[in-house]
Image (cartoon, rainbow over the protein chains, first blue to last red):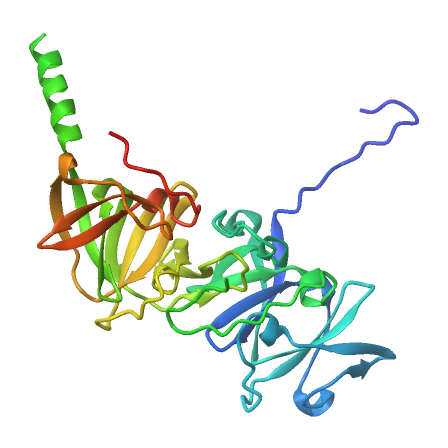
Length: 162
Length: 155
């Protein structure tokens, strides 16, 4: 029972996160699903460059380069993810779209505190999917709004960027 | 009274010697206090993580455990030897930390504290150095690895 003129407000706590999981080689990454505007084949989008889709132009985003890995463009599963945060629109070429997943918030962990620099704003956290470690990426970093670019050659065991 | 006396004896004894794990990175022998080591297991491929933190640029997933990787070999400008490599888990103050080491099974040593002297090297966090078979072995301060501080051995 509520007082007249007062509205009952129910606060729903979102317990799950919806993520689009993509793959570059052995590296699995996830993008928050709310920014996904579409997934195209290379035939639909073109092998490289910006993509115009439903009247919106998506600038080419080299996410593989940002992640310090390479994109195998010969992979038949390659897709172009159209991603937007409302201000910036990016076309992200990935080796494979694993799929949209819904994970419990409790299963999303922050980046370990050993990571102390800018990467804390690039990566929101991690989660696990099909026995793989998945990096949850910040949409702003993916879209290049943070002005941060990292380019790292990563060898099997020489894995730091100093 | 007897118990107190025994505890004091144990405390004194504990201070007289350290149990250390001796391992190698690129052929260079290093040591760590056993209580700073969480375990040693086969190395598995890490997942690269874009990072600007020096020597921390990957993570390992082993079943449900996820931990960052510290690239000690690169820090020491060494090439790892003895593939397949091993994974030494450091009990770092920020949480477990995986280090890729040479594929040589580490050994346990008991070192008299009197034989441990402050390390001369300034490029690595150490607790001191001891000599074994004519070879100087630095005791790496795994708990503080990457914190760029050189503490001298406390007496």
